[in-house]
Image 1: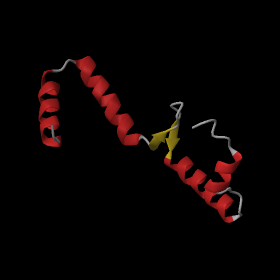
Image 2 (image 1 turned 90 degrees about the vertical axis):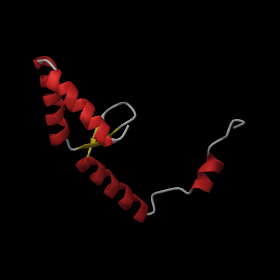
Image 3 (image 1 turned 180 degrees about the vertical axis):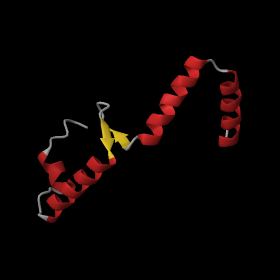
Image 4 (image 1 turned 60 degrees about the horizontal axis):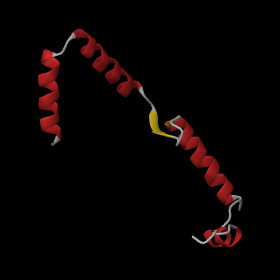
Length: 83
């Protein structure tokens, strides 16, 4: 189902929906429009664009300062336990 079909189906449903449903859709719309969340941590914590950029800059600075280990060194340091 493409975008056009989705819009048509949603519009049709909204035309028949009760006030409770319309309020839920409106709340979802407001959250979607005003949200600066760009992703989520594994535990569900939201990641904002500001935090993502900040963490990326910090990581870049760490790499430029030489604070990293290579994949080959990592493989040597971490036992594979038969994997």
